[in-house]
Image 1: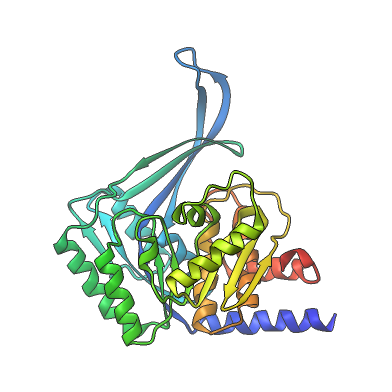
Image 2: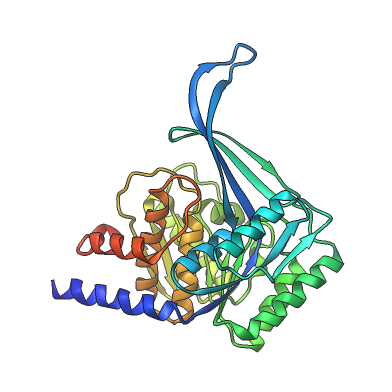
Amino acid sequence: MQADIEELEDLYATLERFSSLRVLVVGDVMLDAYVWGQVQNMSAEAPVPILLRETETRSLGGAANVAMSLRGLSAQPILCGVVGKDEEGKQLLNQLQENEIPREGIHISPNRPTTLKTRFVSGTHHLLRLDRESIEPLNKEEEKILWKQIEKYIPQVHVILIQDYNKGCLSASLIDKILQAARERTRPVVVDPKRRNFFRYQHVSLFKPNLKELTDAMEESMPVFKMERVEELARNLQERLQASRVLVTLSERGILALEGENLQHFPTQARVISDVSGAGDAVISIAALCTALNLPLSFLTKLGNIAGSIVCGQKGVAHLDKKSLISFFKASLGNPGTG
């Protein structure tokens, strides 16, 4: 009981410290749309279900969803990315303003659309996802504009969070500039990667791929999950990147955490999964804040596991807040399944 009380007090103290942190979030911003409805019949025109539309929602996605979680944890996100000069871009900027997230770091491009992911859902079943986007890299002039914004904010923040979705915002040259400036200013960098530029993120503070991203990048076929092989791949990745910490999110199997020679597996807590969208965003948000405070890897990973569980239990792309984190943390005390 005393240990549980001390752990809860640590959480309260940590959340209080989160409120003093400024986080630079750089990456692909987007809108996540959901069309909710019910399937009652199959189409006579083709072997596909007919979705009777009931409601539609649009919310901040990608790096903007990460900023939402940081805001929900009382940190101060500064977001740098690109939207199109279109209605979706206006919606995204308006939602940033409504949620008190600065929008000055967002470049409005006349050359590309705002990334929009539309999911069609019946009950808990995803029927289809429709993407409207351009994954072409920014042109040189637009990259220069974005870099000026990023460069301006780096001295003002405690940690840099790079959220890469392979949508064209982050080129190899831009990544190199960010990492070089971070080293010069001694700012920690945490990265949520995708396949393109995966190995570009050298000497970062924390690198967080999911299992598929890890196996794809390491050209590993794993039709049957083998923890021993995943551990070996994580060690190889850490050596190749010279990263201080590596987190590999394993979906329902939890998180594998590596720091130096210390490798630990933190199983997830059992929970009904409504939607996995946004779970990685929640984990990297916690990782960035804990990295800024130089908190132990075990504490970071336990909070990250809880954060992912919270988001997976909600419909749609969800974000974190302090109240849900505290509530879930209390429920998990004494439960070894949370790590």
